[in-house]
Figure 1 (cartoon, rainbow, N blue to C red):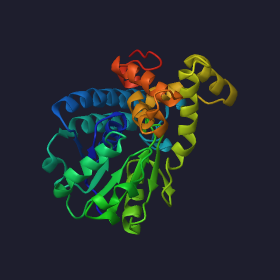
Figure 2 (cartoon, rainbow, N blue to C red; figure 1 turned 90 degrees about the horizontal axis):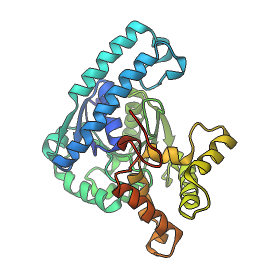
Figure 3 (cartoon, helix red, strand yellow; figure 1 turned 30 degrees about the horizontal axis):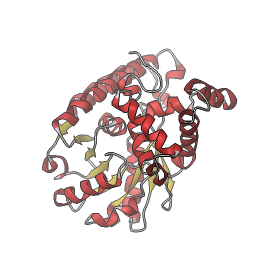
Figure 4 (tube, rainbow, N blue to C red; figure 1 turned 60 degrees about the vertical axis):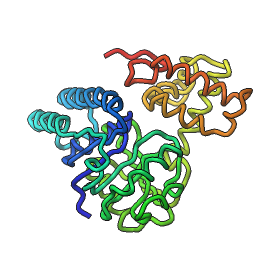
Length: 313
């Protein structure tokens, strides 16, 4: 399938990154957002990504450790070429279209990436509403971290052209793209999605049957939940829990640094879905309460300048 027009539904932390990386790699990209207020929240994320890409390309001229796979091949790290890529970044930034119109966003899309809130009801409402606007040719993928594509496949007119494409955060330097099929996904749609992932400089990781959490989150979510339980239960401080992980394993970041990068809203949405959180006396309910307090205070993570840690420009 010849993919040219890509629409990302949702402009959150990952939605904005997926859109920017796709535009950087030459696709005609639209971000669909549900309101003008959502557009206002998305634009600063694109502004920030533009600066990150430009700064990373500049740093790559002198510092081998600054290399980011998503921006270019290692044999292309040469000052003149990196300057050309800066122009590519600026073009990507100026070319992304933000809209609230279903018809404008989806009417002629070749590839739709759903990256809205990690909430089954919201995703169901989105798919139900968007169906009349989807062309027959389109492949639709979900970037859901924890919800299975099979849960939503029959909401779409072409279930065979629906599957999951899950990205890690900071995709320009963490270039994994997990491609997970559901029972009705066709081989053609699966391979087209693998090819798309490669075309935006991701490394496709094939998940051959549905698995909650795919490959990455099947390992990561238990770690983050354990850290949140230790924090909410008063067992350890954010700093000491992170130090226990990084100093003992050599990992570059602890679970709370990871949560700040992922975004506390995503962590909250996932935790709210845990049946145990419905019991107000449970530790899970306490985690939800404490995360909600931070979100209400605007402390949603790196993109907000503060989460569990404070970040400066």
